[in-house]
Image 1: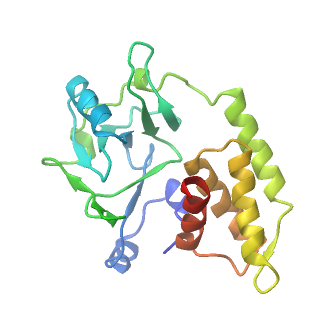
Image 2: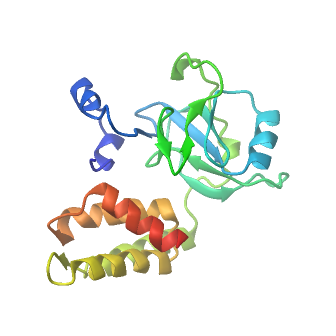
Length: 214
């Protein structure tokens, strides 16, 4: 419905939220919302994580989200990470990330709290040891830099091959080594200046998912 990047730096107003009453909702994680989420996308990983850490969880289609209070500072996003002694991998959604909110329904699955939620302030504080890297790797930084630089040269104009140009931009981000969430954030930013007229966020999400999961 709307580009979500703006909500990394400001809270949605009451009127904005009310206008989204027929939509799924996302939560921009990070210091502004006070939330860090660990995403276990398999039931085995979720069961292991629940045995290690006691916090509020949200059931997803494939696994669970585990909610924590933001510790302050900056918590980088991470995909397929793990601590050295653990075999199970998980994603971390911190500053610059987002998660689907409980109550949302997507792809046949419903996001639901597993128990009571009484506010972010009552969650345990996120342990930064769960995010082993404190900054993006050189490979990650290069992937983002190279991918963004390349797609800035691509302009999508409706009626003049705009769909194909946008599809090429998404796949260039994938080829540069970006993960799915990085590519979505990058193509949303690109869309604001390089697409005429701009695509909706829902259309861009479909293109990114098609490229990464098709």
